[in-house]
Image: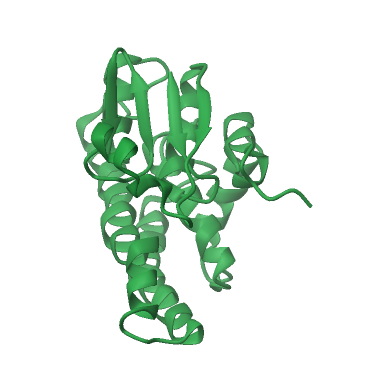
Length: 213
């Protein structure tokens, strides 16, 4: 397997976590989002979306992180990203897709760039935008976790689809100085994940294209 991604891309981060949790070996191939390498003709010929991550696996180039996570779970079912019980699976999907669709869609890099140029917003205004959309979804996610009485993970004693999607978004939230002090359930799950080897190895700072201090 070859994973084409960018160290700070939250969707690439999702796939690194997922591949690590499945115990799958992969080659990490950097694609620079800042310099728009993902829009080069050679890349878009393989991935018309021009998006990251792209996973080269089983003779096919696969795009779109949420579809990739579902494919991985079907192709490599152990350990499972979703619980066996249908209601528990629904709960995991409810929260994971809330983050993936309501936060990431409006806060990803192309949107932030567009806010700056051509719309002319300052970085301070863009930061307010980012934190606004974080709060709009993270607050109800926190409330749902409180209703469920979750422990270190959303379901059971191991991370799954929700944690795979959550942790990269919380990493971005911290980069944008978002206040998580009123989110004890989110931060408890974050702490448990950040101590897990699959998440540690997937962290942006651990990637070969991360800036070296």
